[in-house]
Amino acid sequence: MAHTRLSAFLSGEERSGRLIIFDKDGTLIDFNAMWAGWMTTLARRLEAATYVSVAPQLCARVGFDPASGTIDASGPLAIATMAELRAHAVAALRAAGLAPAAAEAGVAQAWYIPDPVALAQPLADLPALFAALRARGVRIAIATTDDRAATQATLESLGVAQLVDALACGDDGHAIKPAPDAVLKLCAQFGLTPANAIVIGDTTADLRMARAAGVRLAVGVLSGVGTRAVLAPLADVLLPSVGELLTI
Image 1 (cartoon, helix red, strand yellow):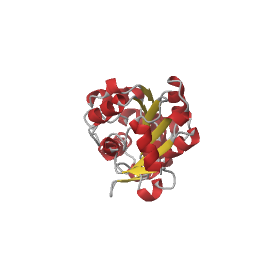
Image 2 (cartoon, helix red, strand yellow; image 1 turned 120 degrees about the horizontal axis):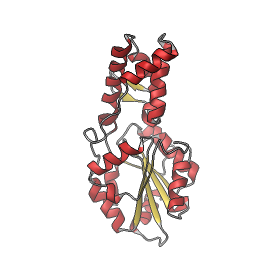
Image 3 (cartoon, one colour; image 1 turned 90 degrees about the horizontal axis):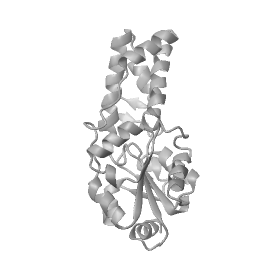
């Protein structure tokens, strides 16, 4: 039944306005390619800057196992903003024994952001997908906890910036996932109710955000950090990847 509702939404059987809100990392682009290597390098840079062994503590704090590459789908690395991840780095150094000022200085020296262009590996033919959706009259938005400048750079590098109607980003100032604020903001921007929108994401935070906002459908994808067992209880529909939308 839920797949039928998704098909009806995509096909335009409903005459009212329609909006699809995509998560970014793990949904549109490969999560590990963007963030796993970054976390490992950041930990190494922090140790070089402070002469303190902090990598194990930092990785544990953010929900990342560097040995297996496993990422906790509900952990900070999967859902936190860049500002929050930076705060975790400071906290890890303080827990390792550094004074507050020394911890802040160490993070300031080591901190960097992952390259939003070089590391962005699309999980589907995004130009074709977005063009097909827009041809059906569907508006496209992205709700991410990543910063706006990095998100815009990624979309431009993938050739889809002009196909995305709106963004809600982690540094915009609203409450982040799983709060419904990003969805409500995006719907209001187009004069739509959440019942005219669906949310597609790879984490429990994405799907909880969708349910808190009251959207038409919460769609989980298995292309990111969330497993079927984790996402199924919260998803109306589970898809292998966003590329499946092209076949519906």
